[in-house]
Length: 279
Image 1 (cartoon, rainbow, N blue to C red):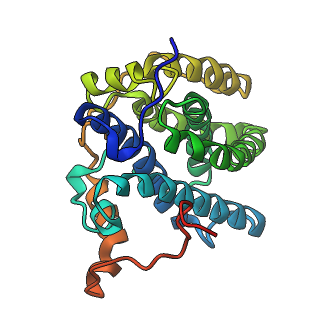
Image 2: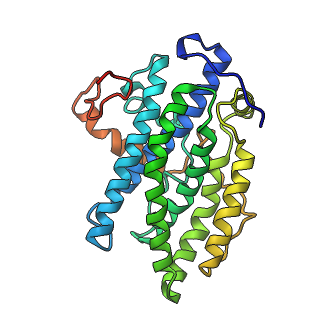
């Protein structure tokens, strides 16, 4: 993809440029936030104390990454409650891979889900490293360093789980369920806006190209573990990017916004420093 001109700061963007930036940021932030919410369900339920702590740390990382992207959306006016706690569930644009409930508490589910997501995230961050929008580009380095550990953790566990016939059978069941939803990571939010994202150089790889790279990585790896991968699987009915969600999404949204509503909050308590604030 040809290099694009560098975009100005948020206050100087045209209406079309702003729409493209916001669409991309919501894709990034919503994926991270919702996946982290699902990961927190595994606290004190993982098979070992070490894995329990590892997944808790991964969930914390993903929440931190979501905060970095939501902070950039605040450049355009909304505050944190507008973006998270008070945003209606029908206005979220995360991939439906991130919202699915875990299947019967099976440890293979969060591990395989993490692997499928983390490979996609690695490609996505690589495509953002030279973004024409400096405020996106400046955050990529911190996130990439933490994501490397997430993929390594998932691969180590997948190899352990697939080391015997019973474990491989369980992973295969999860793979059959999750793989079509993983493809939604590369589904467009809006075709015209996605084209504009690419034309403006906000990312340096198209969704189609990233999907092909992702397939070229995950399919041979999973097949090498003795798993069968339907690389030609159809997308599910619920994509997420277009605000179509599974029946489980409303329940998850209600759960993570419940405390905010019950306490009658009108603003969120910040537990992380804004990276733009002076030291």
